Structure formats: C-alpha cells, structure tokens
Length: 61
Picture (spheres, rainbow, N blue to C red):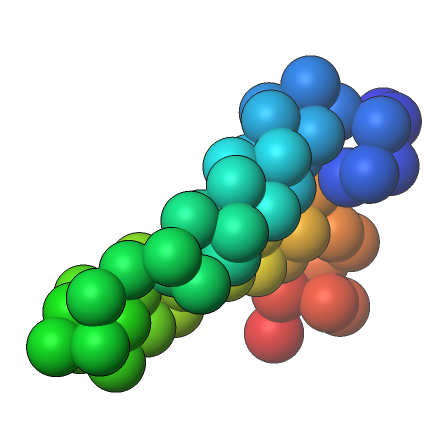
C-alpha cells in the first residue's frame, strides 16, 4: 500500500489547503476569522482523515 503522501487524493487535498490559505489572506476581515478559519480547519481535517485511513491498524486506534 502506498504511503499517504503519495496518494493523488492527498496531494490534491494539500494543494487545496494551500489555495485556501492564500485565499484567506485576501478575505475581508469580517470573513477571514469565521469563514476562512472554518475552511482551513475542515480542509486540514480532510488531510488528517486521509492519513488515518491509510495508516496501520495501530495508527488508527
């Protein structure tokens, strides 16, 4: 099984996270700390879930 960082879905998710980080810098102040932070948090959760799903059984527990 390939490691998580070689999976296309992981690479795409990581690229999305970078785009969101760059985009959130340009957001209006009223959205930056609500919508922007939520987008970053949820995208990071996607990456974490990919890592956990691809780990060994010991990593999942």
